Image (tube, rainbow, N blue to C red; front, side, top):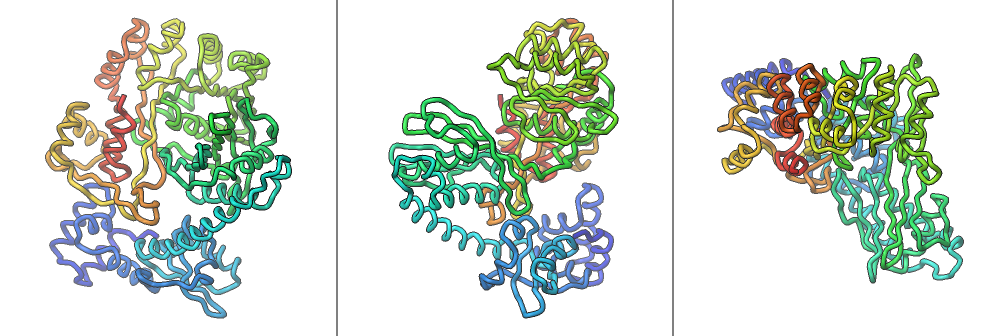
Length: 576
């Protein structure tokens, strides 16, 4: 739902809900800080969230409903599936034989209104509500589901068959229901991984949500054999193999989402540990802006992926989103006029019109061997999942030098660190200087939940801590010059946000993740430093002073000032 600031300003001016002077000052702040008037009014406590939503409802000419404290009939609530309700922040709260009244944060979401109308056959009456009211109503889903889930696990885990025929156990209804429930809740909570870990007396199930592991439930140890057998059947693995690791895949579909699961089973002291990686194959169309690239960094990346040849490297530790960035770039480059081929280990996402090759080291199909074969396939663009050794690096650089655009990843802590790392792997400095286009270093930080985040001034001890890592005044000046923060921000008066926690974000204060980046372009100055085999620190200094490179922690600070994340998250992922 979007209401122009000018329209909101004019209504508030005529309504006398706040003083004219306060409104004028807030409007001026919104203009200079590139924030919406509504956000400024809420931050300065000039109007509360419910009153603001009532104003919006009046402007839009739709009813307002306050769901806080309302007990909704379960049959009415469940007219809209929980996953749909949470995704679109919508709740059904009243029903008649002919119409259904729904509370929404965005009543202009015509697509979801039409979906519910077709599903129910009722006339839909959209009503505006506060985010807090909808969150409180959504908790009623969770309570009923948690109770149902608890009963299911207790009853079915106790009923798991103890017979020796693993194939039959895997098809028993109790086991099927337990595994299906584990998968369903992982998808509902947007988990990226499921860990099933056997202990001496029980089984711990944990979900990785926004990069952090959370305990989901504890199951009786008796349930382990059946659960592992069921997952092995789904992933087409050997049921009678308990001594060796096994890897497999399978797919599920839930609420219109196609989820691919990559399964890894490892023998441990108390049984077999299962880790399943969830990959949402229905989430297409990511953009570089959506993953967190902005300003100068975004322009540099767009310019370099448009070049016909050379090498683009994405660096960072495991789990920092490197593969997602590469897939996003491939999605942008994926046109009928080019031939794109990849070598991956493993192939994470299937992409149409892209030839994806899986590494098979056991039979000699290594990155280097597969890359050599690809060069005979007339490719325009090549993606190498990871450069792990000198041979792969040499073949990739040769491909970049002979007219191909090569995308790959490297494990380094910073963008500048990629160049010394390539030298250490045996690459000639002149080849690095002539083939490398750009290095993108990145980390993932958790996004603040917009429903419950709260502004907080940066304490002086935190200012001192930041100054030990970066020059805060210099960094703020750099960010102002890049138009990423307001001109009135200074180190003595920095307002950030803190994670609070609500039902919408599961009490964590965070929902989703966003990247923080450091982009090093191969300019003439960096080429000369590369030819002289300069250190990481020297290359970083040149890139900052001569080319205006923004450090990862500086990009993180800008995102923290914008309310996307917290400074604690930025420091957590950037510490070395």
